[in-house]
Length: 506
Image 1 (cartoon, one colour):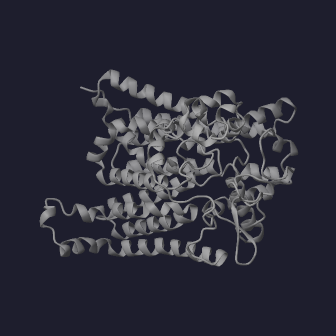
Image 2 (cartoon, one colour; image 1 turned 120 degrees about the vertical axis):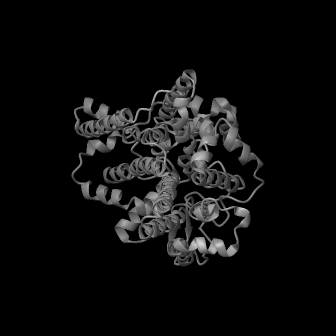
Image 3 (cartoon, one colour; image 1 turned 180 degrees about the vertical axis):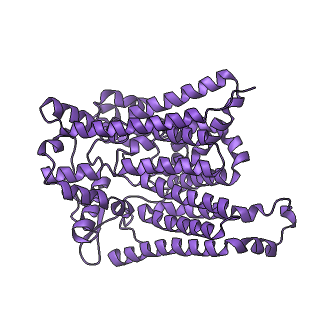
């Protein structure tokens, strides 16, 4: 599904900088890049061609975005490089050519960009699988877990962001991988303590890698640590928390000590490598390369309410399936309190920190860009809602499933157009002259939900159809194979959901 709605191109200047870092890693084993030659996302006063990089101690240019996504995309770049001489030239012309581009158009470069731009399709699919596994390990039914994965994939901003080469999808995957490992550690602690320790080590390694994807992910560390230590806080069954002493808590920690220490060391190693890399490149372990030119601390009030309610930025508008899950939040707190508090704390801490930055909106991103990694966690309310749905009235159940279908329709609409193209249209619209960003945040007519009606679909698969009509069917054959695989997989999921059909209400 994600491949069928991918644009097959680099959409943002941020993406291009990350792409260049990926290419440099594979081609030269270096993080140094050339940069974008013309003006793109530089703030006022910055020279053209300086966006996305800073000069290092050695005089070379280094991207200031996290390089975790560049590392994750190296297999895709290697695949593109290995196939560049074998694919027909016509395939590179399936991408819409009437868009702003950040690289010199050339068949080989176009093919490299096309293949690498698909990375987040696979990342997002992996996140869906991890979400299903997490919900299942928390004790929810297979039906609730599968429906939660389907709703996350089709009814949240995860789908539109699978079209990008931004870091948010990978941040969601890595943080969720840590949560899955911790949930497994909790479940295995009594029967397989060594396996539980290994899961905590995996969680620590995932948390350590997360800061290489985006440094903002460090704010999730206290949330993940509290989630891992939740059994310690809960204590043995029947024990009153008021009577628990410090020594009792330490004794309860003993079975987890090996796993917890290993997880902390691995997470610390990840952070240490990030600081070392920044010191080697920029001469300061705390310098990411932005040098204060692109963002600063500010009062959080605008970001706080806009990311909840503004028509262009509201989390609940751009993740409607998660909004449906709010009805199950109380049930989630009863059935999976540790995981639910993890979800809430991760969302709130990220929301607060992002809102206190001048770039809280995430540039020309769709919806609440910086909150996208928290969406799979918030879906726990959806899982609980599905679990208790059979006990609700028939009308309530019908409304819920209508809401799920409407969520998929809205998100699919957003996943077939380009937010970058819409922002350029807003820039040229006299109604937003001089205040494009504010208009995109707060005006209903300027939100992607309404504005995308004026845009053409920006989908690689449609280009493949046009190529087939012009006598070049090869790429469309590839999409047909993808469609067959997807339909077979959808059939398997539907069969599993059918077998796990909820019992009829009394």
